[in-house]
Length: 192
Image (cartoon, rainbow, N blue to C red; front, side):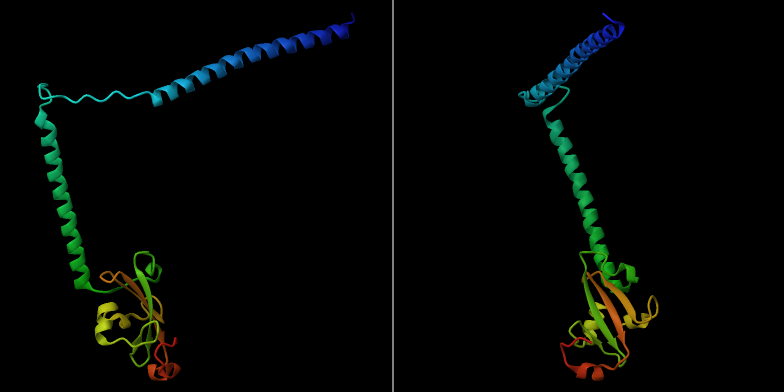
């Protein structure tokens, strides 16, 4: 046998021995992994033993102890909820006394629970809704407040943004340099 043939045979026997050793070790690793998974499934689906609760004969845990703990937690919760309710009523009263207020343009419509409306303020002092119907003084006071139009130029020259927490609404008031009596021939329901 030549030297190159013996080298080839040594290579083949070495590769075969390495392959067998690898197969042997990998087989053990995967068998252990499979056994662990089977055990975890057995534990997960094994019937649970009912938890034992201390009875009245157990002096360390008297029967009324759990009830007393429950009562104290219930009283604590009542106190917490009454504070929340008082706070909410205070916030509502504060919003009603403060009424509508000016907000930054970036705040307009940011709260998805608030509806958004666009109003138009004409040069002759008339404020109209989205369908170009004029608002009366009571509607103005209730929605945007009487002094909202005094804030043109505070953030932008031709618009004012107002939030009304009581009505859960944001208003955009746009300035129109025309008089209402000349805008679209004063047709109610037409957009300007």
